[in-house]
Image 1 (cartoon, one colour):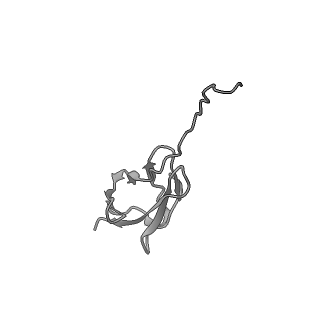
Image 2 (cartoon, one colour):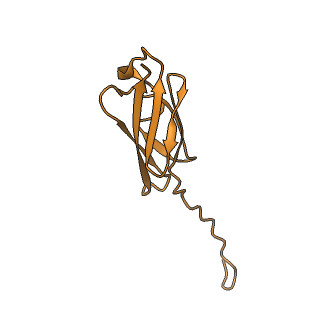
Image 3 (cartoon, helix red, strand yellow):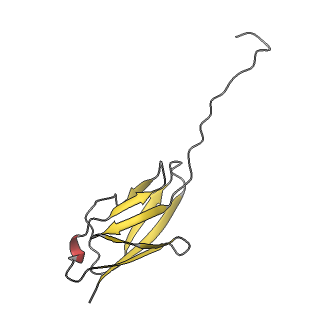
Length: 102
């Protein structure tokens, strides 16, 4: 490289997107309230709330804890899901409440 030649930099910024885009359990889509950070859904009568394995869809490049498909117990309290952006500094918490139809 000689003096006066331009230097080309290829800088890739990591995404700060961290949204829960879809939440589905027992064949039912959850209702996501982004502003409140909540998800609610009512599953069919007789569904075992102690062993649900929800499918979650999140922002591209983000990660989620618990992960999609991980078995959770929704029988007592809301379950906290945390979505972390690719930049690892940006997070969003969601409280998920599942009830069974009467």
